[in-house]
Length: 346
Image (cartoon, rainbow, N blue to C red; front, side, top):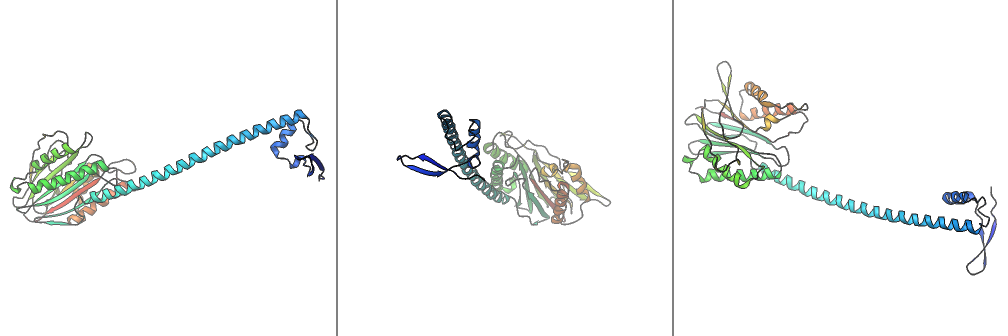
């Protein structure tokens, strides 16, 4: 154990002061190391002028270095503070955007009828709808017409997000106006598509297009008129004495938004009592499982052939369950919408 020594040093007022001596073990490690580099073995011994000057120069360098470190630390703290403010601002903006998207999604879900059974003369309908994101591009609607007729429109805007959702709202509103403003005796599937096409061309952009199909079921004539604008073709499932007959209504037409003056052709199919009808968007076919396998047309046809004789709501649930089993935990990559209808007695 070192014995403290009494060292006399000259004070600033020329008086003598007594301080405790400090040995090497009490010195700061960096100072002690520097003293050893300078050849000082006794920290209590008065250093020579050269050693003292070198020590002062080293200490000045250390002070400058620490001052630089403090400046860098202060700058780092300032940058970190600005980044924290930026992250907080971005988080608030993201939350506001998510809230806006959720609100837009709520509005868009109002574009489709509620998920309840819709009763019409000669026709009972039930549907399902699920957007792939907060906002989607699918919509469908049903319109009662004079003479117990029923019009069903189903459409799919390319992509999903805010822009397709906005075009969806415009197209759905336009379809409502077209049906209300047109003389019911002159209302045709092709005419509705032609008017919608003009709206999409005027409202959309070069990257936004919309497929659509329009059907008018006429129970008094036992027939369905149909026109398509690049949309998936509806199915008719008909019971036969020994098996089910699966028919697909054939039609052709260009996608809405391709050309302002496009025209559309109509097809007609005879309907029987207890026929099952299915309109759908291609999100059903594109539904993928964890291996990247699509649900596809083949699976859809097999499912339709095997459906029970049941109300449309039960059939809707069966198809929805099949899609969920196929995709498992994988989220849908595209919006999904489909409508089942069963005919009554003709």
